[in-house]
Image (cartoon, rainbow, N blue to C red; front, top):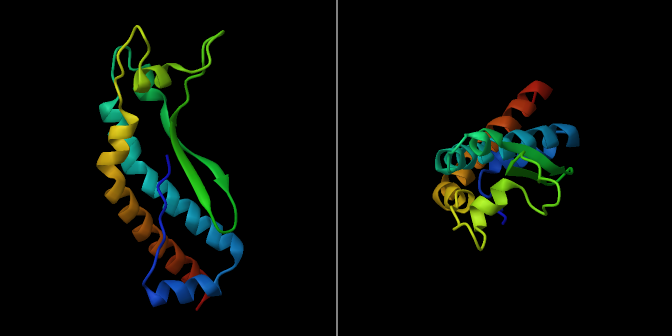
Length: 138
């Protein structure tokens, strides 16, 4: 599942992006992507089924891919699959098995926090870019 954020509008932001070097753009993208993932991560932790708390505590947001023009942050569990298993515990909780009904927590978190995540990304991107421009003295 993907959430695509495209920032349009703010002429000041567009002009600022043109002035800063690529590594500063990447830093700004990274901050914005991480900020956008946070509301989804918090919601997923609240919605995760709790027996021992291992699943909830294993949820993290991490960079999965980064280039000069795009960044991808994933919210996922850091639990490893058990020997002989194709998926980790989080997968079976989200989608269920023939013996265990699904207890979805990630999809509902994304559905609930989508708009908030987009707004956090936009706001943080604007702040980060303007901060980089100020560092350069423009």
